[in-house]
Length: 243
Image 1 (cartoon, rainbow, N blue to C red):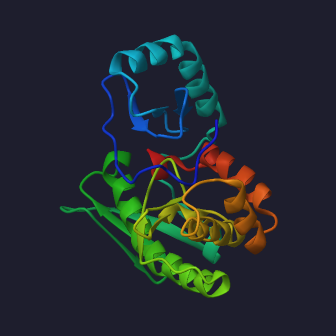
Image 2 (cartoon, rainbow, N blue to C red; image 1 turned 180 degrees about the horizontal axis):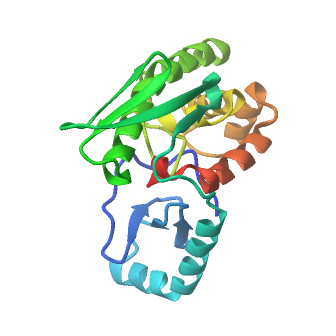
């Protein structure tokens, strides 16, 4: 399965009762199914596809969906429910995590240590705090990365926002807004740089046409290797990030 760096819209479609969601794309002729490492299922269809046709398509492929989910579960590395250390290769930081029972939930980074206070020291309480911390941590780093590549490429977005998506590394809207995934801090500096270039190039071409890839290749000739690595990266993402 492939994980597109560009989604066709910025909408967050609701999860369907059967555990799948629908995304429409005028570029899709035949329905497609994507199964993501966290177990989510996305069905990509043409806007004119009827709901009954979508449901039938999902049921026809239900065995493959469950088999793929099982394969992802095997690939995901075993880890502690509450990590004691967070690795951020993109910026060369390795931060210990300290936990403390408290009457309120909060997270802060002080003196190179992530400190979490939570009512219960469980994944349900602590994982969201870690994700909030990561988004705050990533904001200045990713905005600076955009500024650097803006000067390099000559492509300038109107706005940059930092999110924590579970299915894509970034996106570019038709209004010129770049959305970058805070999880890029868990990737290499080279991968982070590539994603920024990838999305900036969408300011010129809102598609994945030949002309688009020619533009990407002008700034990063080794783009195929980065595409391959990033498409597989979700398979080994830590559970607290995508749980």
